[in-house]
Length: 475
Image (cartoon, rainbow, N blue to C red; front, top):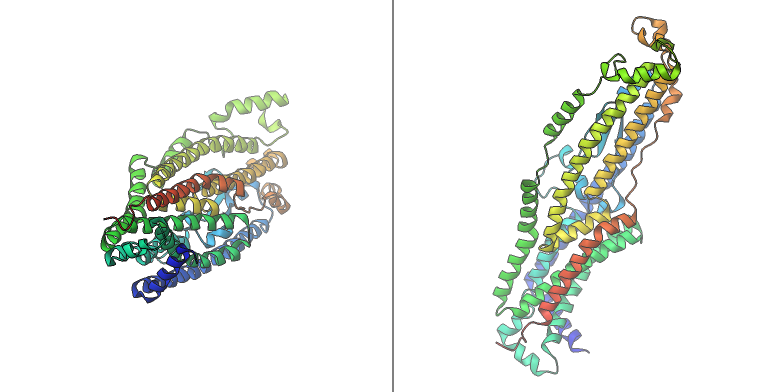
């Protein structure tokens, strides 16, 4: 047997006798399985519920009787963000951001009904997903199991005996690292099962598994490297716990808080007030006589060679409503894009912190591959707004083309006119069914590639630390 495999086998025998390593492994596995079951159940329930609600919302809209088109503009309609398959492993921002948008005329409503705030509040660990366990707790378990792997030999003086055998200090380090890597591989088995159940053998699931394997292997190499460079097991444990605390707890929090301070994003109230102020400068789309649309009326009269709006072949009210909605959209899109840019700037600032924290790197890679990152949320908002604008303008065009102007202006006082300004419910079918699909794999891989490179750099650096460690027998 190769010296490397012989050392790895001996290390496993030692761990089987070690109560600390065994206890840490059992606790982590229990937490991992519990988080997997809970997250799986919650996300699957959310997905089924949102798909059902989406169908229900569409059926309610389609089942409306004949109405005035503008009443349907205000009647509105809900669209829902369905979690992608890998959200079962990493829910990402889906837990904290809204899952539904109410579409109506003249407004771009914010997403509402986030799972974290719609359900019972259970504290910081209430949303302990499998991704969080692998990102935070499994590295801690690897440290607990392997911190003394090499340093223990030095404390016992067995390192010199080992080195008198036909093996090098690198073979000793590789043997210890191989033993700890086998532990990490066993811990990855539940993730492999979850990926297969969620996606089959799809490439995104496999790449997600590879990313986590890279991350844990980096922690394995770092643990044995620090152990090889430490004079005692206690020193190795102190250094490794400090590194884990900095990388997994302190830096992510500091990065997020720093991004909030340096690149502030307006609160929802501030954003809504700014939009409302800008919208007040626009014309009232409900009032065809609003001075803001004077030029539009003049152009229509010239275009159709008539002197009065009553003689136009189209309903001026519908035309004004359509023009007003276009102006409103331009203003609201400007605010929405500005808000999205500010959110992305914050996310980019945190992304740069991935250079110092492998946890931020795997978190960015994981949410990118799972399609639960900020980019996916922004796409949901954009597609929801496209659906809103399309259905509102189709109803406004119907208002302009199918409703008689004379009936329209007296429908509140004339029952006959009111009845004649109703259009068939068949027109509600113009509302396209909304289904948010996962981002294309190429897009998700593109967003995750920089994080993957950082994970690879983390592994290489940890390996170099181990390979170049001073020979264990040299004091």
